[in-house]
Image 1 (cartoon, rainbow, N blue to C red):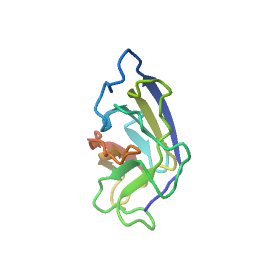
Image 2 (image 1 turned 60 degrees about the vertical axis):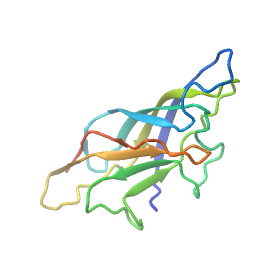
Image 3 (image 1 turned 90 degrees about the horizontal axis):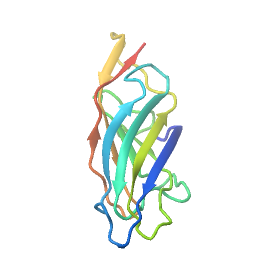
Image 4 (image 1 turned 30 degrees about the horizontal axis):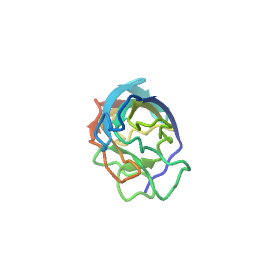
Length: 156
């Protein structure tokens, strides 16, 4: 399991109205929005923004837990394995995004800062391009759809 230094910024739009019914599915849904830069020098911060919506607003933990992760980012390079990791998935905690409103449906954007970035692994290359895969899990254990980003390029 790889645990890295991560900065996460979240903006939630809380929905209100006359009904208690969720406005969205209670299984979270995400969409890729953008990379701050789609070409990044190795070991520089990678900044990714994705949008989310969740019908019952149960995203994130009130206290981060290093034994229960809810944000998963997969490096799709075949040769990639983080140090001491069993796979190429980085695991993080989402910010606590539970609304105080009567209707718990939420939507917004989350920006992830992957501090320390990534190296170019192939010694014969000056750069590597690859997509990342992103998925989140709510507190009920529902996994979102998997989003595949456009290629990210890491340069020497």
